[in-house]
Image 1 (tube, helix red, strand yellow):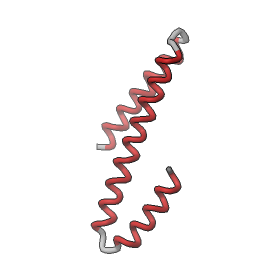
Image 2 (image 1 turned 135 degrees about the horizontal axis):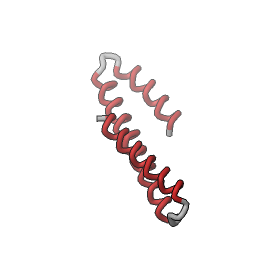
Image 3 (image 1 turned 135 degrees about the vertical axis):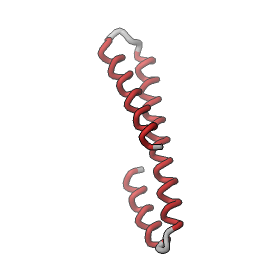
Image 4 (image 1 turned 30 degrees about the horizontal axis):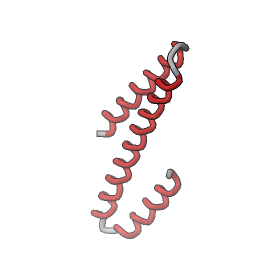
Length: 77
């Protein structure tokens, strides 16, 4: 699942690079592409966080695992 999302993000970044290299593309179009990349990254991050929480909560050591995960999340948000 992550692989497909990452490939989509790579494609969006490559499109952004092409826009930047063209030099004649309006700023608005570049900003739209940057926004699309940012949205895809946010979506990937949310998915990873959600799945990590679910795995932690299924664990025998749910409380300890959840505390570690929350620490990691706070570091990246």
